[in-house]
Length: 632
Image (cartoon, rainbow, N blue to C red; front, side, top):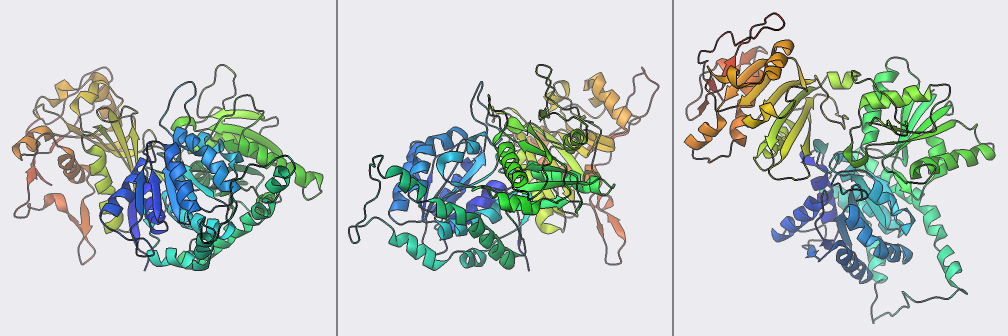
């Protein structure tokens, strides 16, 4: 029986890294910090790794120091790892060149984040890992929390077998902080993936006075070039080694991967190529379009370095006539971004050698600093591929009125997969507990039901004290929606802070006939008068149910101070109207009609029924009397 966990991408990766290593050198940097925090917590609890030892956790003074500690530990024969992102990864580059040049196996887990250029940003794209292309490290891209967990194991097995260090990366925040229901990899599977003979070989290569070797010399022109080329066989063999590790993992877990995974029509004419979380959005959109007869597909890049043109060509349908390659980074001054250039070069060489005809290839940028990338934008890229003269270089997700590279998109476009999900949006304040409460809700639904669950949390860069917006999804099928809940799709919207009603478009995401839960100190007969006119109009237009509670008053009465997160979490279920269950005969029981069991607390959640009025007229709740107290 498969064990499932409802956790975020960082925790999923940290679990695997902790099991397979003996030394973990860390230094915190957003959004990778929690991986090191998890490892530190587990070590303090005495949790053992695969070999029954507690990994040694070393926090250095910077990422450069962490990389140096890693290099030293690896050279002494230990199995070691680290976690980093952005400028922290750049500080590791000198050591990465050395570690790769010495053919020393290890895995570096990166929550990919944008680099500081004209401004600093804590949010995710692939600028940092793309700066490491020339280090000699392999680069393995995961698209989701599930893949991040799985690839952490595959990377560890592959690096030991091939002696090429691996940068295992996944999109910062979008994958690192997404909470999702995943199939857990147990310790026995990790143990089966790690070859003891390869571990012993790594230890045997350690610097030791018992078997001295010459390493790290200074070489002159007479031998340096030849020695550098000596590494070629290792890189030539590594794609095959990674595929072997993927195949072994597939036999153990049932989840199978290839270096380039294709999804879509077998006779596709238009294909998008990309890597990272955006590939899941394209996957979802492709399934929607193929169901309507479109000949489209997506090629997900797993192993980016060493790049395998043969595997790329094998994965692409022979019917493809036009390809869009999407990069989540920008190289100013270049005539194309890195992945675009690699794909273009592979196809051009294949065409020159007569292996296949040359398709039209265009390149685009998307998602810098966690900019949204939605199915509507994917559809815009496919539409551009169908044009007679598509833009060779373009952007999607922004409106570029300066260089006019951006593609327009239809904001009303929705996929079938999105429409089949339940969506909820919660507005809170950083450190007020809203995010923690929503994570608990996701875990309850993920672990106590057969539903798939996903939670993503939009943080302000100021973190504590700034607005946070939680985007939750639930449904019976796997969730590939790696984008925010779309406008008009949330059946439930909650506002945990009363001051937000005047500051934000709280109901932009609300679906027609949905529910709006508001925490407010106003009494039930005064709530309507405290709301801005635009908010009232939106509630009338969308036929929303309005529920209110003074959560701060409840918290004070219960001795909870100003911690309202669990109160608001509890109010969600009766207000949302989905708190039903089936009895033994298969009929439904409405839990909201039951008397509260002994020991349960009644929370004063009030429902306000709205009346519709002619345009331009004010409306008030049809009934402002105190509603029935709801058992929560």
